[in-house]
Amino acid sequence: MKREELTERILDIKREKNWSWSFIAGEIGGMSPVLVVGALLGQMKLVKPLAKKAAALFDLSDAEERMLNEVPYRGSPMPPTDPLLYRFFELVMVNGPALKALIEEEFGDGIMSAIDFDLEIAREPNPKGDRVRLAMSGKFLPYKYYGAEQGIPDLGLKES
Image 1 (cartoon, rainbow, N blue to C red):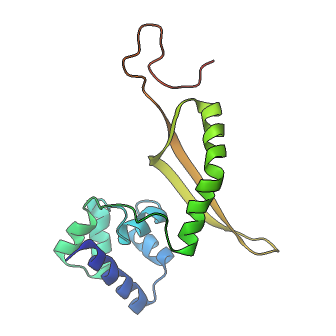
Image 2: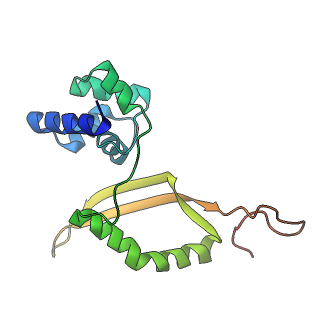
């Protein structure tokens, strides 16, 4: 079985049982719902205890349980064709340069980690139409200036 086939099996069971992602994430627990759902969709891995819970919930085989614990091949072709995913892509294309400039001005020469990262999603009621609130928090990772000579900073942290 390939990982894509396991994802389709999980989605079939979700539809059959009329489960919400919220219910599924609550039953498996242990980490952010975004990570649990991402793992079930094949973009993340579940640690062994959570893979075991997911396997029990979805009545998966031992091999399928082990597959949930494997590091996946992440990502998808760019640009995305799904309209919602494309809007995230567009958000970064349009706002990315400003976010980059603001982050570098505040922190220095580096990146915001997508590995050491938290993401929360919430519904924000609004009389003009509910809004999607995303809260992202990623560790700042300064570039290492390898080969730096004495008196030259090793890391790209903001200079005072």
